[in-house]
Amino acid sequence: MISVNNRDFLHVPITDYIIPSEKVAHVQVGNNAEHALLVLTKTGYSAIPVIDSKNHLRGLLGIGMITDSILGLERIEYERLSDLKVDDIMQTDLPTIKTTDKFQKGLDLLINHTFLCVTEEDGTFAGILTRRVMLKEFKKYIYTK
Ligand code: AMP
Image (cartoon, rainbow, N blue to C red; front, top):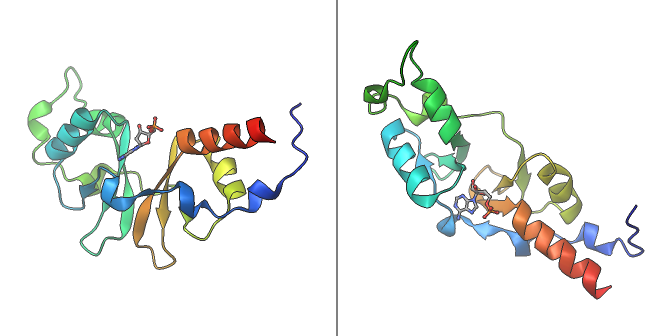
């Protein structure tokens, strides 16, 4: 088992590791699934946050959720994409983390998720915390200690 003697890093705030909201690809509540599929395909991301007009986080949308929503009995019904709203197919029970939370919480949650949505106390979307960024930071810490 890896043993890290100094665990101070676990209590470091996550603020420095957040990818800020203005750099995060997202879709808005009310957008249709066709637009969302376009954004996901063009960016190459597996899932992106869904934000409302007040910049509050409302859910998460992935390519799999979109495909699932247009699965017919014998074919994928692409023609339904423009009628479907992201609100109807997004995942709403997502784990979130607050800007004031610490490294340890991020690490714990990122075991099961490639990224986490970060919110302010009032639910405003602040950005995302990715497993890649946290692992990089963890590696840096281990190599320099
Ligand atoms: P990465 O750590 O870059 O491999 O990203 C893992 C996942 O985090 C991606 O597949 C996306 O779902 C999400 N992600 C990372 N960066 C962004 C971004 N700038 N905008 C939206 N989603 C992102």
